[in-house]
Length: 390
Image 1 (cartoon, rainbow, N blue to C red):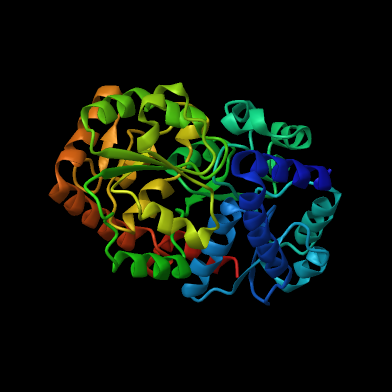
Image 2: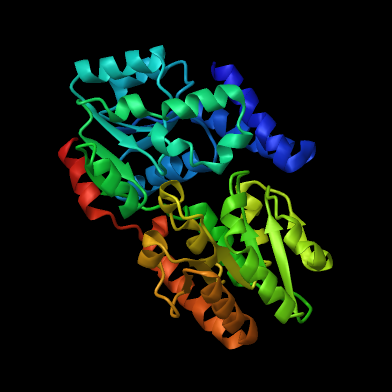
């Protein structure tokens, strides 16, 4: 089953990025995979189901955050052949989207026997099968992947009465996890030290294109955002008709639809790239777009589309939901839009006013630096809980 799941994911990746683009990404994943087999000693062990973006934010980045606060945290993957032995070497085990199997069952049984701490971590609702059907990604998934998703990723761990604590990315998700009778800590997705260094170097350079166009950027990341993007199609068409000095950057796998055919010469498509190059793509934009479909699954998504652009001083117009409303002060650190009229009006303001773009972008950067980097991380209640278990 694991082999079939990996084959399905590679097929999905190739459909959205082509052979060479996918090969580059898979090579990066393979490198991360090998690194995850080398586990430094410590007290806290993150167990990830894979090596993609979700694992990047929720295991490697959070481990880095904890290490900055004098914890000893390490990361491994579910496929590590020494996973059972590692139980003896750590005190707290954080399972992120860990697919349940006979091997994981043995690992958890051993942790329980040693009376050690288990924490469940998730960054979306795919632990609950009733929400999985809302995923746009599901229609493109392979059969083995669909079977696993429909079971719920990590559901067995979450529903285990021994597991008392969960960590997640948003207050929206936290409320759902609390309904499962868990104590929940919101540990937001943050920018790692390496990514911050990359972003800071880009910030110090002149990112403005050598022309008079204003570039609107949408960065899909995975082949699951067609419906999200479709929510702002009418607004974007209206804006691009009104402002002939606009261009649209579409990065990553996306089906934009026929509505944009008239703007073909003003649309720039970019492939999905490894994380090290991602910020270079974002830097090409003058305005960042962060739409989401209005479903619980999408409502649960984190604010990384705001912070990824914010760290580069690029203003964002985002859907007006609970998460973005908590991260963005409307008109100050970004803009929030709840309907086509608002999207059109707020994009128009930013397109017309270069100084406004600069001012809002700078405040977005200040906000991101203050609250969304590992360098300045602050999750004190969570840190205190972990200390109590060591």
